Structures are given as structure tokens and as C-alpha cells.
Image (cartoon, rainbow, N blue to C red; front, side, top):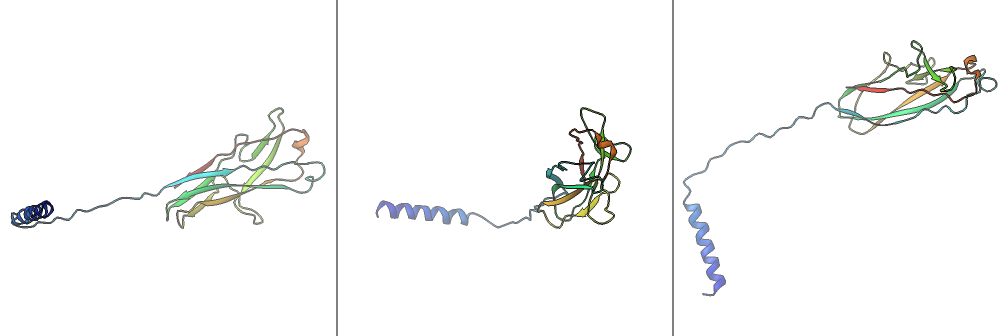
Length: 168
């Protein structure tokens, strides 16, 4: 016999002798599980930039509008609320853009739609939805500075900062 045939014979004998030494078989079931919790995150947001607001000519009788957005992602079937704070310069429940160099302000509002009248979007009137899938969902924020604001008599840059809160 050559060496290769001898090795194969020895290996076959080892396999046959090891299975012959077993007296029986037993089995068990092993359960495998995982939990996927309801989960959401804000993946991005875009700023609302009104640009130039002219209270003397263009916007004396016409509102100035702009849009922004919040993009979020949730597990399928998760119901969520997206709330928008009143901003850092609010007077009561009125959002305000403020000049950092003067005390001048511009009132503005944020809405979840463009209906007339539009639905305000804040911490008490907010957007509630259920995620249809895990794809990112972008929610548009409609913004408006009402026409003819006499408080905008000071030429300056005006700003505010609003917090978006996602509850699920």
C-alpha cells in the first residue's frame, strides 16, 4: 500500500470506530429572541431664513414667508410627536425675532401646514404621526412674519432659536 491509501484507511477506521462508540442521541431546543423597541431620532434640520423683510414697501401689506424642515427616522409603527418651542425671544406665546444690537423685535409664527388659517406649531399644538417604515421622514415647517410690523423700524439683523423636541 502506498502512504496515501494507508492514511485514508486509518482516517476511515477512526471515523467508523468513533461513531460506533456512541450509544444514542439526544436533542434540545434553543430559543433565540430579540426585542426591537420603539425608537426615533432627529437626523437633520434646515434653518428658516426669511431674507429681507421690508416693513415700509414690500411687506407693509403682505406677509413674508419661508420654510424650514426637520428630518427624523423611527422604527415602523412608532407614533411620535414633534413639538417646536416658542424660541429664545418669545413674549408670552408670541415668537419674536430680536435684533442683537437693539431692543427691536419682529413677531413671527411657525405652522405645520399652509391652510387658511394655518395650524400653529408649538409645544401645545404639534404634529403627531405614526412611522410607516424606517425611511427618514421630512416634516416641513412653514414660517410667516405678518405684514406691516411697526416694531421693525430699526434696520438690523433679527434672529431667534427654536428647539424641536421629538417624543415617542
